[in-house]
Each structure stands twice: as C-alpha cells, then as structure tokens.
Amino acid sequence: MKALINSVNFDKEVETKFGLMYKFDVKYGDKIASFLSKTKDQKLFIANKEAEFTETPRDYNGKTYYNIKAVQTGNSNFGRQLKREQSKYSGFAMSYAKDLVIADKIPLDNISTYTKKMFKLMVDLDKTLES
Image (cartoon, rainbow, N blue to C red; front, side, top):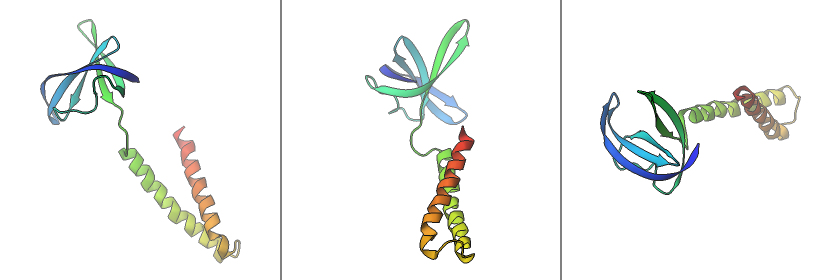
C-alpha cells in the first residue's frame, strides 16, 4: 500500500537474533505502526513524504497493532536469479541458431535475427510461468 507518512518517531533499541535493531513508530492516516531499522538514522520512512510498504496487523490483548515493511526496489535476489537465468538463454539461442546455419536451414546472415527470436520466445515462456 502507499500512504503519506505523517510522522516518524524513534521508540527504542531492540536486540534481535539479527543483532541490534532500532524500533520506530510511524503515523499515517489514522494508524500508528511499528518498523525495525538496522540503523538509527533510517531513511525508509520520512515525514510528509509518500511511502510504499506492506502492512501486517497483529492482535495483542484484544487490540490490533500494525507492523510495516518498506517495499524493496532495485535488484532483489529473485531479480538477479532471473537475469542470470535469462543470460543463459542468449547462449542457448545462439547455439540453436548456429545449429540451423550448420543444417543449412537458415543463411549465416540471418543468425542474429533467429537468435533474437529464440531468446524472446524463451523469455516470453518464462513470463507465462509467473502468472
């Protein structure tokens, strides 16, 4: 979800299994949520700026509390793995196109065109697996 952050306040230091973390309270709309940061000088949530995050409600003693986590942008591990996998496709596509040239199915001048077509087909097939 996206929301305008009204305020961000440091709450306390928290010892976790991942080491020392810093707990902050964030007010947005009519809710107050908590999040943990690895640094006390966090830059994920800034007052008077819109932020994108996931919100997780939790109930404790009959009251609902919220935890939020910033949506990560950039290269995720999944994104890096996908690029690595797709980089293999370029080698496969070139190899398959070379086989077509050797078998006299396509002229050498068209190897680039067929390589690109096969690469695009492999990437498009990957996308069908995601949905």
